[in-house]
Length: 158
Image (cartoon, rainbow, N blue to C red; front, side, top):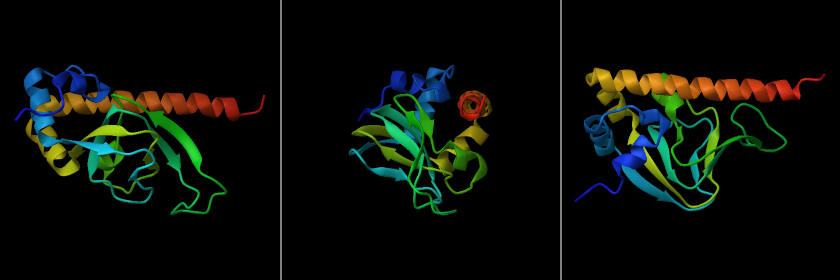
C-alpha cells in the first residue's frame, strides 16, 4: 500500500530540502500522517515530545500557556504560527529537554509525525541525510532567531 504522503509534500518542507528521492523515501518510511481536529493540543509546555512534526495541511499556533510549568502568567503568550511545510518538536530531537512551549491546532490539520528515536538513528546511520537535515535545521532555527530578534527590537523604546 502506498504511503499517503507524497515525496513532493516532504520536499516542500525546508527541513528536507535538497535531499535525494531515496533519502526522502527513507524518511517517509519512518513517519505516519496523523489528523488532528481544531483546538487539539499537540505538545504541552513541559512535556517531553518524542516526535518531530511536519505540518502537511492546516495551521498550528505555538504559545506559552497561562498555566505555565515555570510560573503563572496572566494569559497565554502567542509566539508564532506554523503552516504547511513547517516543522516543530525539533528542540527535543536536538537536546532531549522538555518542550519550551505548547503547540495547538488552529484548524483541522494533517501532520507528518516522525518518532525521535527512529529519526535520530537514521540521521546517525546515513551521514549524508544527517548532514543535510541538520544543516537545514540550523538554517530554520537561525531564521526563527533572527525573526525573534527583529520582533524584540520593536518592543524597545525609542
